[in-house]
Image (cartoon, rainbow, N blue to C red; front, side):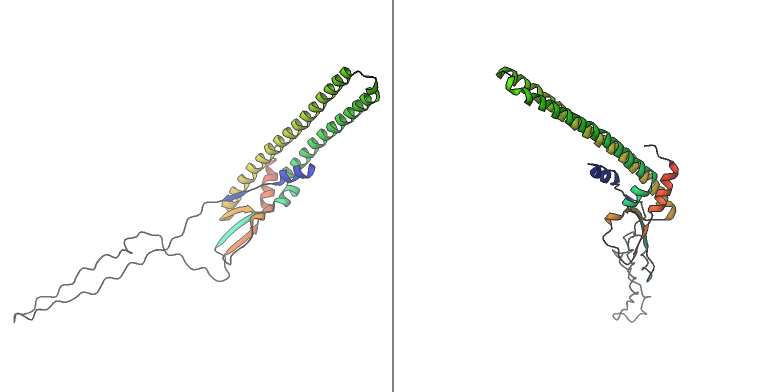
Length: 229
C-alpha cells in the first residue's frame, strides 16, 4: 500500500503550455499585368494615346496574413521548451519529501490499528471456538451474529481509513500541482520557453526543437516558497 501511496504522491502531472504568437505564411500579391496598347487601322488619323488595361485584383493579394516565416537556420533550434523530471522532483524537493513522509506516517498509523483489530478478532474467534461445544443452538446463532457484526465493523474501519488516506493524498497532490504550475509559468515566461511539461511525455524531438531539463530550477523556486502541506 505504501508503494501505491508514494507513486500517487509523485504523479505530478503537469502539462503547461505558455501562449506563443502563431506563425502563418503570407500570400504574395500577384504582379499587375503590363499595360496593353490599342491602335486603330480603320482611320488615317493619328492613333489615340494607348490606354492600359486595369489589372484584375489577385485573390491571393486580398488575403490578409502575417509575414512569411523565416526558415530555421541549420543547427539552431527555433523552439525551446522545458521539462520536469517528476521522480527527481518528488525525491529532491522539500514539498515532495514532506508529502511522501506525511502519507507514510498516516499509512503506518492505520496499518498498526488494522493489525491490532485483526488480532483482537482472532482472539475472540478462538475464545468462541473453545466453548462452542457448550453452547445451545440459539447461543451459537447469537455468538455467530455478534462476531459477524464485529467483522463488518472492522471492514468499515479499513474502508474508512483507505478513503481518508486517499483524500489526504489528493489534497496534498493538488496543492503541489498548483505550486508547480505557478512556478513553471513564471519561470517559463522569464526564460522564454514555449512550454514546460513532464519528462515522461517526451517520446520524440524534431531537429528544430530543443528540450531543456528545468527540474532543478522549478525545485529551487518551490523550495524557497516553503509550501505548507
